[in-house]
Length: 445
Image (cartoon, rainbow, N blue to C red; front, side, top):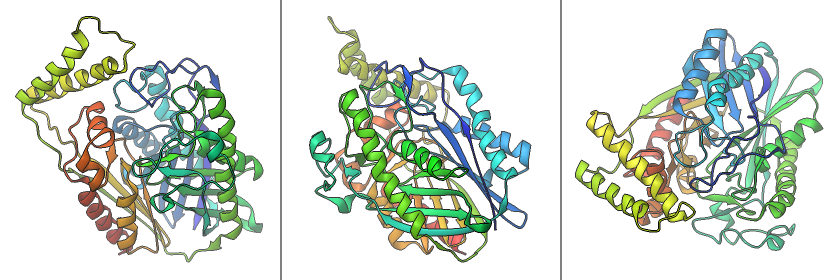
């Protein structure tokens, strides 16, 4: 097989609003702690070429991804179904999604962004050279905790201890999967590290641009191995936060290097332990799936809109109040949904699932923030030797909560779909597991 790696700078200018953590927070970027990158890996077997891109972004809209693929295809001839666009989900970067109120999109940046992402893919393809793919897992602990079923945001002095572990580590990833590519004389061309955890060490009180723990770790390892490019692959982070979260800016920035070092140490162990994989060829699969969603009539939506407008238009309502800002998000979403109903548009848009098989490794991508239980169900029944479930891939369509979280409702199950102008999923747990296993079987042959 042949491999190529490259990266391109996708850092926005200062002043853009950073995405995440709440409605209309005005988190304007004041500094660049680290550059944001689009990192690409090209893999070739004969004439077949697959492109995997990892972007230091909270997510990327379907429209922008289509444009990225168009540019790459026009310059390389690689078809869209062989191009996978993935995001790390850093909350210390700009909003490139359809989220309303979670960071104002910067239109000039969004116009140039697809071209800047495509640069990495084209350069990776141009650098294809013979290489050996190796793989290992390494312990990766002291980074994440399950925010749905464990205690979220413990005290800083507690989680910064080297021996800190969450109460329920089994509800998080405890290993990092590492792919390593070496050329002749064991020269490291590049690597990929797969792990599932929200990159939210820095959060609502911080104003610096960076890729959070994952971006800092990858950048440090690239400097440690000059000439290499390291992709972070986000796994099932839907219900997993970094152990440091929701802290003041000084504490967050202090902790950022600590958590990044923990992750980098795990990746470093994986690079040292990686063993060559059998050459098994390349395959790709792509599906558009309409996952079932809850239904609301126009009358129901109008009632829901009236309730939110009641908050907004009440005597003494202030835009400084969280409830008022959140009501604005809901009101905009309900108005959009009603307009789409009037236009006869489909309120259950399809979601793209895409899979790559690289030897025995199956990358199973979906445009969701996937909960751990869903990932575990897929991995437990997959036919591939190394199945890796990637979230935030080829879109940003909200959370894929497990049955328990969906049943009780709340932010992941109910609020985020509305922020995206969509209705909540009806049974995403079972439907997504089935769809990803079908794709895994197709890749496994």
